[in-house]
Image 1 (cartoon, rainbow over the protein chains, first blue to last red):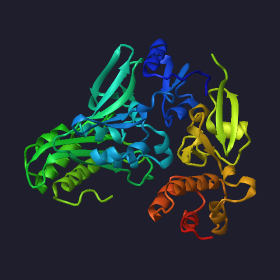
Image 2: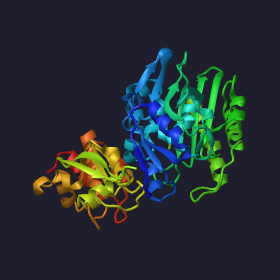
Image 3: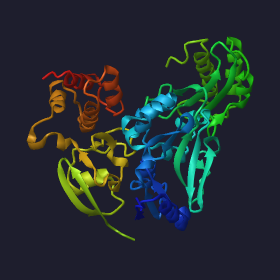
Image 4: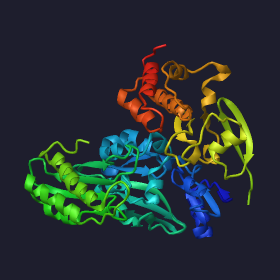
Amino acid sequence: MRPFEYAEPVSVGEVCEILGRHGEDARVIAGGNSLVYFLKRRIVSPRVLVTLQSLPAALGTADPMPGGGLRLGALMTHGAVATHPLVRERCPQLATTAANIGSVRVRNSGTIGGSLCYAHPAIDTAPVLITLGAEVVIAARGGTRTLPVEQFFSDAFKSVLAPDELLTEIRLPGHGRPLRGSYIKFVGQKAKSSMAIVGIAVAIRGGDGAPVEEVHIVLGGVSPTPLRARRAEDLLRGKRATPELLRQVGAAAAAGTAPWDDPWASAGYKRDMVEVLSRQALEGLTGLGPGYQG
Amino acid sequence: MATRIPMSFTINGDRYEMELPPQRTLLELLRDELGLTGTKESCGAGICGACTVLVDGQPVSSCIKMAFQVKGREITTIEGLAPGGQLDPLQEAFVRHGAIQCGYCTPGMIIIAKGLLLQNPYPSEEEIYEAVGSNICRCTGYVKIVEAVRAVARGER
């Protein structure tokens, strides 16, 4: 590890000030699950390392928002997201998703905000957050901005954060009638604690014996950033689900992907799994099948 | 540039006040500064679990944790389970069940199992597998490791 200057700011403003002063030479560390390995291997060698461990406690808590929404501090660990009563009540698919990230060691250290900023193409939480219409709150020297999670990623391992910006919060909107959703993390023959080969997040409103009023399908692991399956959504929106329609929706979801071969799965296999698993997820939510059975 | 920064920790019940370069990992602090070599390094990437320690009772990979990240926290290593040489029930069970082959993964296995039992004294079979299965043993099939953890959870002596 190359030497670095250590900074331990106590406020978000101070973080942004330090980041603004040092630009690309500074990096922030939250849980450190990914970053510490990169520091050791000199894949990244910042001149200044800014630890977030002394920021106000609110950055690590979940709080209710008016209208049934929820705010999650960016420094909540995956383990905290998985077990927080409010998350489990208002957003059970996010709690379940967090509970299946990595190993218990990963969940005890890794944070939801750090994971979003790392921007791995097969990130588990982002597809779920996008199906729920979540936003991120981003602080900078001049103030804060909010952005849909869908617009947060710019490329594999890249977000739209400017050098002086810090992700501080994730906001889940309240819904009049809650979206029902699920996330399938498909790891194939890899260990359960591995990154997904493909991830499929779906959420719908209606669809239980009635037409599907609203549908969101977001895929992980099949493009550089989480991918909204818009054509598949358009096929289903406003219609009553049938086995044949869901087959078409699964095929449309797969057709829109751009996966690549890797040591665990070929591009074609990933596309096939998206087709099958998105169909199964929607069958589960519309009562036409048991859903994904692992 | 500050070359050393003051840090304090509680490690296995003892309080330490030290000045360390910020580049130290928790694993390096334990092994190289304090000589607590029971904690092992294997993959160096936070995957295999050989370096597992408890921070405030929760298992973490010490190889991908910076020492400064655990300032003020309570750290338990395998050495801390046997104060004065009196083995922890988990350690006794690993011995009794022969849950050890080469032994390199053993400290991490015992610590991750300790973390599980601290959170959840009566884990299901699946929960035991999930916990120890996230640490890598390349000698054996985990059966005896799971048997040892199950025996402790059931209070067998």
